[in-house]
Structure formats: C-alpha cells, structure tokens
Length: 529
Image (cartoon, rainbow, N blue to C red; front, side, top):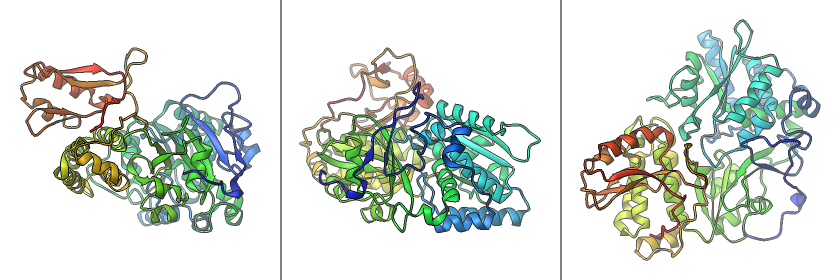
C-alpha cells in the first residue's frame, strides 16, 4: 500500500505536543491540511472558554429553519456510526415537538464504548466548547429546555463539567436550559442511543427491549435530538463558516473534514483530522502504518474488513467506501500487518463482542457466542460445515436484536470471510495460515488488582477434572459453549467486569471443580488453527 502521496496533502502536520501535563486517556493528534475541529490544539492542551472564543469566535444565532437549511447545504450526517442526515433529525424533532406541544430535549452522545475509538474523547477532552456550541445552537433553535451530554470516560466527564461551569450552565434547576452530564459504563452497548437515553432517565445503561424513535419519544418521553459529539462540533463550525466556506475542503458531495481514530499496525494510536476524499493509504502512511498490510478494518468492530488490494485504492468518503463494501461508521480505522493471522484477530474480537452483549435478548446473548464459536471452529480447521455454520449463525442474529449490536458483530465477522479468502481456505482445510495471532486489534483489559504486566482474567479448565457436565455453558453462554463432544469450549477473551459475577458463580457451581479464573499474560500467540 505504498506509493506517491497526493500532492494537495503533501504537507501533513506532525503530532501536536500538549502544553504542560498530558491529559489522561487521550491519544496523539495529527492534522492533514488546515485544522478545523482541532484548531487551537497547538496553543493549549484543552481550550477553555476564553481560548475557544479566541480561536473560533462566537457562533451566530440561527432559527430552526436556518439551521436545517445549513445542515442540508453542507450534507451533514451523523458521525457516530449510522450516518443519518442531521437535517432530517432536526425536522423530525421540531415537527414532533409542535405536534405534541412539548419542549424537546437535546442529547450529545459522547459514549465511545469501543476500544478502537477515541475521536469523541479528543473533542470532549480538548475542545468541549465546540461540541457545546453545536448542541446549544440546536437547543436554541428547537426551544429545548434540557441538554444532556453522555460520556463513558473520566477525562471527558471532567472536561465537560468544567466547560459547563465556565458557561454558567452547571446542572441547576430554575434555569431556562438545564444542562447535565451523564456517565455510563465503558461498554460497547453504551454507545447505543437508546442505552444513553435510558441511563439519562435513571435506568440501566442498556438498550431497552423495544426500538423507538427518539425524535418522537426520547428523554423523559419528550421529542429528542440525539446525535454524536463530532456531529455537533461540525454543526458549530458550519454555522460560523457558512456553507460556502465550509465546503472549501473535502469533496463536493461530502464537504468538510473527518475525525478518524487510527490504531492497529501503527506505532501508537492517534486521532487524525483529514479532509474527506483523501486516499486511505496516505492517511495510514502519515500515522506510521507498516507498508505491507494484508487488510484494513474500517468503521471499527461494527464495521468491515477491506483486503489489502482494495484498501490500497480506497479514499475516505462515505460514497467511495460504500463502493468498496465498507462504511466509515464511527471513524475507526485499523490496519492489519502481514505477520499476524487475520482470522485469529477476528476471532478474538468476535469473542469480545459476544461478551459485550447487553444480555437482554436471545440473538445477542446466545447468537453472538454461537457466531464467535463457529468462526473459531472454522479457523481451527472445521471444514466446509464449520464455514456454513458461521454464515448460518450470522443470519440468525441479523435484524433480530433489540439494538444494533448483533447486526454490527455479524457484519464484522462476515466481512472477514470476504476479505481474507486465501487465509480462510487455508484454515478451513485444516492446515492453517502458519501465523500466530499477535493481538494487534485493541481490546480492553478488565480493571482489577492484577500484577503489573499480567493480562486480564480468563476462564480456564482443568481437563483432568472436567466431566462434561455443561453447567458452565448454561450459566455463562457469552464465554463458554459446549463442543461437539459435550465438553466446554472457552472463548479466547478476558472476562469483562459485567460478567465477572456470573463467571465466579460458574466456577463455584462446577460439580467437578474443574473451572477456574486465571490471570493470563495477555493475548494468546499460538492460535494457528
């Protein structure tokens, strides 16, 4: 994936050094072209209210009609994954509020539960006022009385609370607009809009058992405008610049810039601001990706794999990626080096996705472990039958979950079958690809009192004691399933915090005392299938 860099973008900005202490949890930032969302990052590690106004100026006041027209003119779409047109959301919420005679609410989704995503953490941690500008523009235009910002990380929560205090918008009753921050657990399902709304209303941070339109009945039952943190920041920029100036960078169909989180086969994870339409190989080269790549995962763990040849000709726009069978999703881009097993990497993440289930519906709680297990069987030389089982398991979960998690996991797994056909054939036929699984794709380590350098807790079986009772599979289907011989087959994944209680119960209830929780040294490098 090497080659000449496109001339208009030859002067890439190097990583910005934060002034003073480093903010926790935030990766380096790289900028291609002139900064927009990241403007001012060379002046301060976090733009307080005064610095923000000095860099960006004050946003104009816009009516609902003007804001809708602006969002349409710049083709603004949600940057959290679904890519829904923002103007249509505005119209739907405004119409519902007038029809119901109710004051709407505005919600900012800054919940990045996926370990491969950090772009919203950068915005909320370093440019929180830009996000708030966009949210307050929408709130003023719609006549909203409530603003909620959902986050999953401590640094983002602290930064947003400070920003609200700087504006005099701390959570107090009696104000025309009540603004508050809601902290959710750092889990994949926390990024689901319905999970955020449920948590903001005082419930668990899990998707409900039914799907409903937030624009009709969202926060507290009121019509709710809910969008991603970057979406609101882009709205604030468009309001300041106006549509013509906003469109001076990017492609005609998708003007403006993108925020991407690049990790995987790079020296260190980084967040990149780039004009839309830039070549994917160039962005990866700027981030230090190795030149020999066998594939690139675009859109994160609910996205899809591109094989090396396809990725080498891809450009970063929704239209161009759609032609390649991919989508920007939440903006995560993960190149895969040639010295790790792509199926082994996919199996690791598939097991993690299964464990991230909300546990509320069968397609998720039972279907995703079955999908991950079927892929593991195929990678271990299970033959054509195992490969068909992968496709059947994916088909069984798609479109049947209470949220989008099953669909995203199925998309991720099925894309690996298409992108890595040669490796798949080598594994399915039993010989394997001859490479170990290096654990290049980032997965979180569950918190706990682990010795330094130790890996996450994992389930383990003492096979000299195991009698194949199968009780563990019934108690913990996300991590344990029964193999063809009736004995447990364990997921190659750590035990996440939300499953630790059930894992301990499974250990205690094992009739043969064969199951235990162990600390492993990290990713298992010997997965050769």
